[in-house]
Image 1: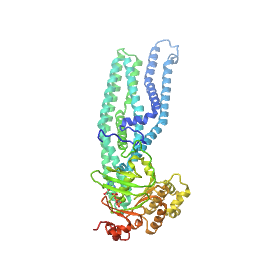
Image 2: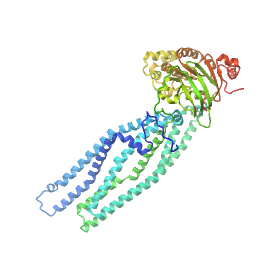
Image 3: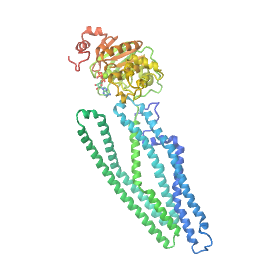
Image 4: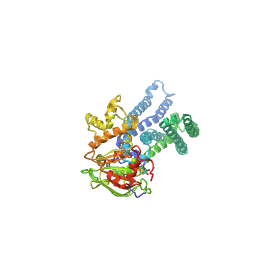
Amino acid sequence: MSKNKPFKRAAQAPYLPSSPSKFILYCLSTFRGWVALMLILETGQAASSILVPYAIKAIMDGAAQLSGTDLSISVLDSLRYPLLLLAGLNVAEIIFSRASGAVLIIMGPRLRQRTSKSLYAYLQYHSPRYFSQHFSGALAHRISETAVSVNHTVWSILCDFWPILITFSVSTVLLFNVNQGLGFLVAGWVFTYTCFSYWLATHCQPYARDYAAMRSQVNGKIVDAVTNILNAKLFARLQFERAHLNQFLDNEVSAARRTFWYMERVRWFQFIAAAILKVGTVYYALTLWDSGMISVGDFTMSIGLALLIINDARNLSRRFLEFFEYIGNVANGVITIVQPHEIIDEPNAKALAVSSGRIEFINVCFGYEPNRLVFDNLNIIIEPMQRVGLVGFSGSGKSTFVSLLLRNYEPQIGQILIDNTDIQTVTQDSLHEQVGLIPQEPSLFHRSLKDNIGYGNLEATDEDILSVAKLAHADDFIQTMSSGYDSLVGERGVKLSGGQRQRIAIARVILKNAPILILDEATSSLDSVTERIIQENLDAAMGRNTVIAIAHRLSTIAHLDRILVFDQGRIVEDGTHDALIAKKGTYFRLWSMQAGGFLPEENIQ
Ligand SMILES: Nc1ncnc2c1ncn2[C@@H]1O[C@H](COP(=O)(O)OP(=O)(O)OP(=O)(O)O)[C@@H](O)[C@H]1O
Ligand SMILES: [Mg+2]
């Protein structure tokens, strides 16, 4: 995207930032109070665990003072305050940690919900071109992965890095108070260890990324193979498919090994660094004690703090690495989904009100890619309530014509008017409400048949649904299904035959009752008898509409008011069936060549 081009967003979509860190802040924006509470609780928890060695120091010092003094005072009495401090710290640690667990439970699922919800709402306003370029499964996966990763990123910061920062800084301060040398020793270690852990994590990142890529590749291969399992069976290629998958599994194994060996090296570093800190602190503190510079309590506290630091710092590289991975996932999700919307409503877009249904294409130039035009200066007027048939060879631009009218794509040059209003100036929702389309390959929701038909009008009653199903000749087969209108249709409607799916699509459009009706091969999968019945019902139902019907079977459209013949994006003939037959041009040739009612595959001239 060029820099001076503004980032187009649909006004109805949430205003999502396109950088991962800002996106995470956006998701967190409604949880500010909870985040602050979480920081306080985590601070409390970290502080109470660091102060335990301090309480032990007080006990040790107290006990050391007691030895050799009057033993009539009970040890417990004289050490009451340090002991109470120790008990109090332990109670505080429990309370803080469980309270932060509770906040996590309250906030976690809601944060995920907010992320998924906003990404999904943003995704909805992308154009058909966007959806043709991205796999739907991959998009769904991206949304859920991004939502999980936003949570993990936030938890990493709140529950890992923040407490570690508190532990490191408070213990360094405590040790500086005991002895400057000890303070420097631990501060130096912490600094070196953190930097080196970070460095190791960045160097491990390419391996981890490679491993993740291999995992997702294997996943993709399995999905592709399972989707095409019937092909594999029909060609007796099950063994071949196993061998094919095995290559990718092997790659995954090598990538996994490379990552794990690297992590193993990181662990060597961690163990050695921990040993150095432990032995170093013990040795140094011992020499200080020996020379009387620190008390026995200080000595114990130093050891305790060193152990605490080692405990917290364990797996710091791994945490960095995981953090990079989460951020990377969020970045991937944001880069894929938070793209500019290609087709948006103008700021002051009005609702389209169709009064007569006149359609006009003025000087329309359009290509899916700008350098490969499908239409070059197309001009056509379809009069109100005219019923027009579009015919022409496969790839001649009939479906594209319809897509432009629905504003699924926008022409590079020219205008498309409905009732003298440019469709680019009206809201897409209002345009789509006024146009009913039965697409070339209708797809259904995996919901009940009733829900699928009722989609045409959410307020329709059961009787309405029944009556349109009858008009679309769908009632007969629905009644024979085990759950009738409540039957589920499978993904995209796979449990229905092609013709049954078409009839459901027809029923739902009749129910929608829009003033402009478009049929793109709406009855192509039906037998001639059923087609004729539906045709009559459709003719009756669409009496008041402007109709555009595309058909390869010319008998389907021969009776319409007007026929437009498409050839390579141009309208080469325009007239009634009789006029075009009399003209003895392309349409006449097509009509005479129809063997059994279908167009021949190739243009035999
Ligand atoms: N989504 C798309 N992206 C890129 N090119 C496309 C896309 N859809 C169609 N085309 C191309 O545009 C041209 C016109 O296609 P269109 O689908 O409009 O033809 P059609 O007349 O409806 O054909 P058919 O009778 O086979 O349905 C073809 O060359 C086709 O390859
Ligand atoms: Mg088509």
